[in-house]
Amino acid sequence: MTKIGVLALQGAFIEHIAILRRLGVEAVEVRLPEDLEGLDGLIIPGGESTTIGKLADTYALTGPLRDFAARKPVWGTCAGMIFMAKDIGREQPLLGVMDIVVERNAFGRQVDSFITPIEVNGFNGSGPFPAVFIRGPRLVEAHGDAEVIARLADGTPVAAREGHWLVTSFHPELTEDARFHELFVRLVEERD
Image 1 (cartoon, rainbow, N blue to C red):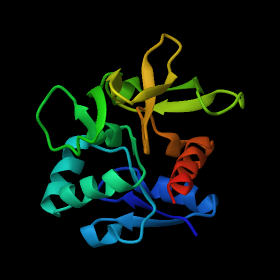
Image 2: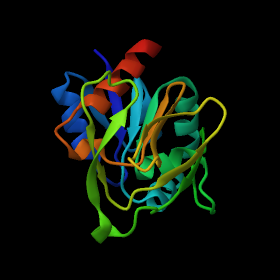
Image 3: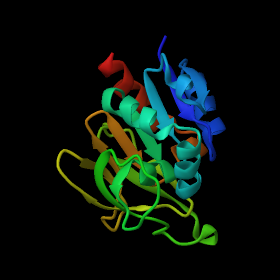
């Protein structure tokens, strides 16, 4: 059985775990380096990216997370996307594994949250995805092998893939639509 961890330091990890379990995937919370053992993939959820980075440093997780990401699929949603980026235009603890430039809180404050339909490359005409934006980051640039897979109607990139890494500016775990989780599970199973 596929086993996917969800970084459970802070943020929306419970919602990711619920969707993965609904898909028949063994899902576990990750808080310490030893929790990464035996995992096939990892989700870094939304939350507050500075807090996630500081807690990862505090619990000696940053190095093990980088080692894990070098070998296995990782998906960052919202704050997780910031944490995975190589460049966010400021100093804070990051994994820095994905060749993307990200702008934090680009879609406004909490009161500016919104849901909008987006088309996603790879969902094969199955209709738009209901993207939930809560203080979401903006994907400014994708370099090297990083490829934009979804944009807002105005052309703003909001999701990308680079090899076995996936990032989304929004929160797929806050919808009933499991297509992004299904996509990530396929990435994980293809790597095995």
